[in-house]
Length: 514
Picture: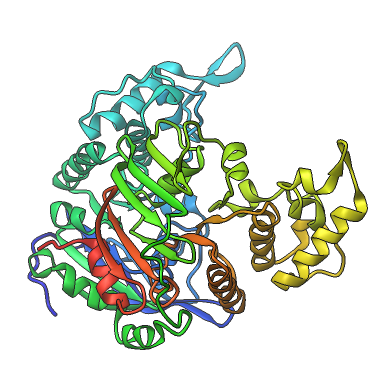
């Protein structure tokens, strides 16, 4: 579809760019052009190729074939420095600020101006303030340059990150999920900044999963799927249904055909006391009055796009989310205080999203990790019994089919899938009756994913209640009994996990916009 030109000549053109990682075709002949003053929304599901495209433009990756042109001239980026020199600035989702430095020092980080004093080079504080002030001034915001970043809100930190990208006065600014860590009321400020920059002639590529933001900020939309550019069209032609269909494509039919294979039937839970009940859960700016229950033998999925509040809900239940409010009942009993120790004692386990950083102690052995939450089972009169540790570990290794030669093997030497099994096994050894799974299949191979699905089904058939969070929406249909759909921190709908299709679920998660 041809789009009527509203801007000037392209600032940046990507011409049939291809990138492979082994046998995976991350990008396959992608071409697009972004013009001065245009905000281009770049959409696609996880694995569509968005991050690869951004990293090629930022100089972090080199394309295998194809080329990039800036102002009509072909460029070859060997590093992020080359990209910045060509007028492209990238602001990644993961912030790179130093909390102990000031706003001015962070904004100019890496380009601190210097002057000669007493025969040596020293930082020119006056020039530093001037350079930072110009960048922050372009945003039209009022953040003191002398403020320490650690004292700023998340929204202010995100704006400082953008100001950092403006130091070189870029022609193209790439924003990768800039609102994912922001509270709802903070999003408007950031979108206002993007509008101001585009009105000043800066071209913007805006990567986001939040469909409701797109009509408010974008002029055009490009959809990627499986490394290919599916379509580019004007915002006036965008609807959630159309975008969803383009993002999912024909594979939705195959996914929907698979739905239900992992879960053969609904469980009879009508008269059972909920194993877990949540009432009025609130995390200011992140989760808004969420209530639900999970019965014994149920697998309930939490579906939602990045920033919808999924992880915050699990962390709030487990007592690790700061500022959360609400009531949590386990087996019908209200818990007045919640912490990991209390929740484990009550039979609730959490497998965190960051399994390496929060779920395991990687230098320790497989056995030590598996019994880490089972102190009373491996000790007598306060003395740990190595024979009991080995017995519990070997039993769980067999049960979960953990691939390791010895129980003494360091957890760090295992694959991602086997590390995930250790995290789950640690919870099972603690005797949990409710299992909170936060992204349990992230970063593991297809076979390991299938094993995790099978384990979930087996545990549920034995009466365990499971709350399952996944950013891969196609994982939820067929592997859950019910799915709660989150948007902006609220449960907006509940759907059948055995009959709901992927396209329907994605559409509900994104929300209707036109």
